Image (tube, helix red, strand yellow):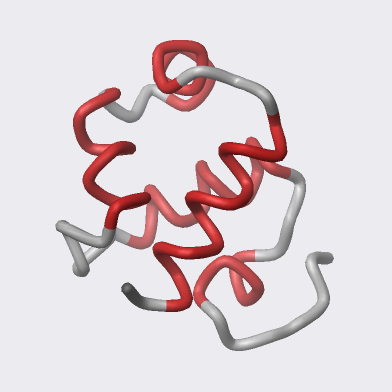
Length: 71
């Protein structure tokens, strides 16, 4: 599993939100969120990275695994 997938999964768990709640918040389909978090889908569009970073209040660089600091 990639750093990006691990971070997405971790942030989802830490948020306490369900995939369905995140779907409503971000506009990203629940099934896509599950694939990103599990590492099944490795190519994540930049607009999705931006939406997830905003939803979890972290930087896009952190989400991508390029930085260790969340913001």
